[in-house]
Length: 354
Image (cartoon, rainbow, N blue to C red; front, side, top):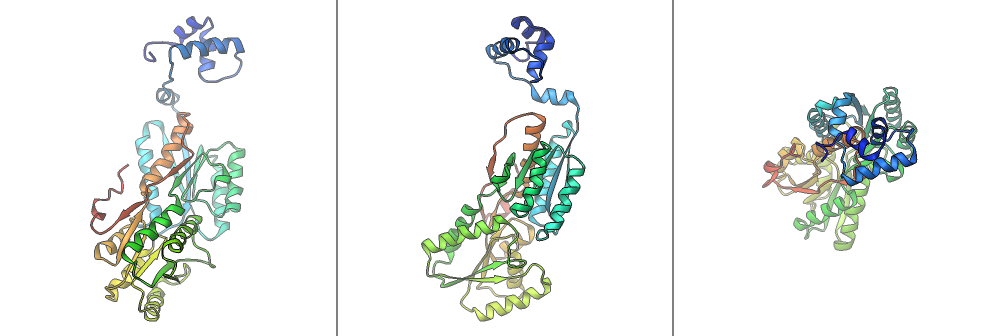
């Protein structure tokens, strides 16, 4: 019906002008209540569905979204986010979508503030942001709300900020699942190592904090007698010093054969185990980055939990596109899969498959 009926036809059926129908279709003002009701009645009767794709293409407007994420190394989780966002731009290139990436230092609030203030200068159509702490991030999102700029939270969910949408794992369930998988192979162990990377005693994100809550919840419920010994590899430490820290730890804890980290840096321990030929120790970690995958294939990483970063980057951009360009409703909370990888299935993991 949509392909056959014209605005002129709707106007004739409604008994109003073509201009009035156009204003109703585009939700513009200056339409009387009775005229609007007549047009809406006809639209309902013919089951009219606007072709938003055609309208957006005809409008020929360009859109720029900004993505604010932590500064990172190559071959990192965040790099896959960027690749997914770029793919979404390529897919929607007919609609003139562009994404600009901006970076901040994870533990330095001032750089987050500087970055978002710079972002606001460009008056973006939409924003994707990996939050800092709640208070600092709220300073940014309040300004976005004031300007009616939609934003998506990535990685850490903070519902009080009232985002358009969120993409990331259910971090509590993820940590709980990680503990359950680890203890399938470590059920007889009296002690396991929990490796962290912190700065001033804090881990990098709320997501990692919640993973640890889920992890410890499972351990307390099912393996309360298993000792969890923490090892901190400080983020501001020279990475060349990690070997000595790890060597000292395993010397002092000869009974530790299984380790876990709730971040993407399990390869730090995995590579150390390879260099020192410690074949009776494994670590479990997060994210299918190449350094982790290599250790997984060689056996020093037991499992990886993947959360499809490429898909997250793609979906964040695509959700802004649907909400802003096509005026569609979008899902407010989008939890990503909790996927378990081992050396037997890692080569079949389709990182860029949507």
